[in-house]
Amino acid sequence: MRCPFCGNIDTQVKDSRPAEDNVAIRRRRFCAACGGRFTTYERVQLRDLVVVKSSGRREDFDRDKLARSIRIAMQKRPVEPERIEQMISGIVRRLESTGETDIPSKMIGEIVMESLSRIDNVAYVRFASVYKNFQDANDFDKFVSELRPGATAD
Image 1 (cartoon, rainbow, N blue to C red):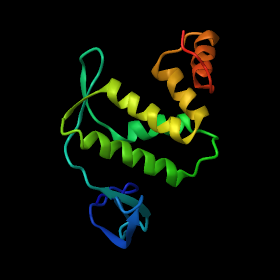
Image 2 (cartoon, helix red, strand yellow; image 1 turned 120 degrees about the vertical axis):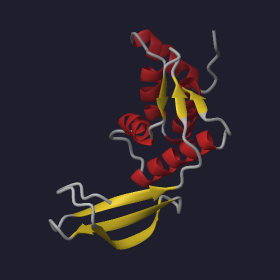
Image 3 (tube, rainbow, N blue to C red; image 1 turned 60 degrees about the horizontal axis):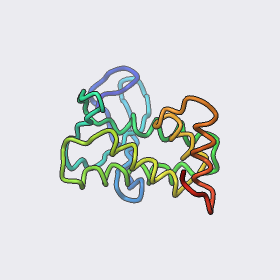
Image 4 (cartoon, rainbow, N blue to C red; image 1 turned 90 degrees about the vertical axis):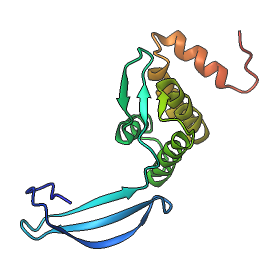
């Protein structure tokens, strides 16, 4: 593993342990060249996924991009970081288990919204506002009114 500080390709593993509910391995590493210490994570990847955008454009699936968007929605919410990581890992496993390598971006968005709705309603609304491209306060009002118990759809 290349050292992120000096670029040395010979680093040593000092400690390994399971992470993210045993779906990843956390490794503490040490660079003998510069003395830097850093952490890496290893995860099983069942298949290479490709995201198919609504425009038809295709790009490689990026777990970090998914995690970033979820963390933005979860910002300042009372949800443990471990719970967020578990949710992200669950979404990725669900996408990999579809058996398809081409995943429509719409499917990813729907799965993320479903997962967020079970964990935190504020994060769910935040994510939905970007995903569904809300334009004004009325879009928020309509969406939130659908979340309320006893709400009727128009």
